Length: 134
Image 1: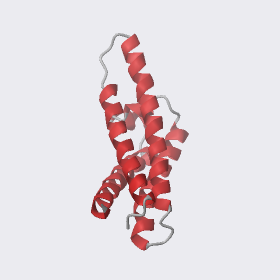
Image 2: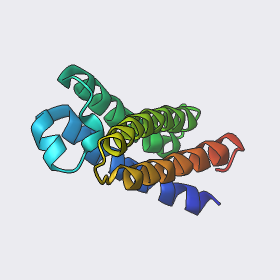
Image 3: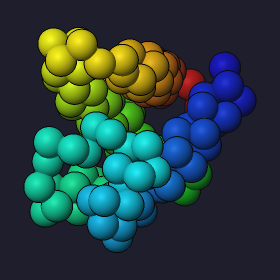
């Protein structure tokens, strides 16, 4: 179980470092062009804050467990990143509804499915680390 948790934590950390760094420094237009359509409804300062939170969450997924210091921060980071995914699902859901109302096709359902997968991985980390897996 510990190996599986480390693999998932590593994958999530890489994912959130990449997306967090992009949100922290890229322009909104570049984020949209890269396929991050969920950023559309938000002002740039919110994107910057979200990016920094994702970067800190990525560190929290790995460093506490790796160092043995404040290990409770690992599941807390996974909870925080799960909340980010809930927000992403809401954003993509509103875009999906708008696309459907306008009679347009939309890739937002695929984006929501990806958010659900990442949320499930966050829940796996929370459950595994709270249960005391070393």
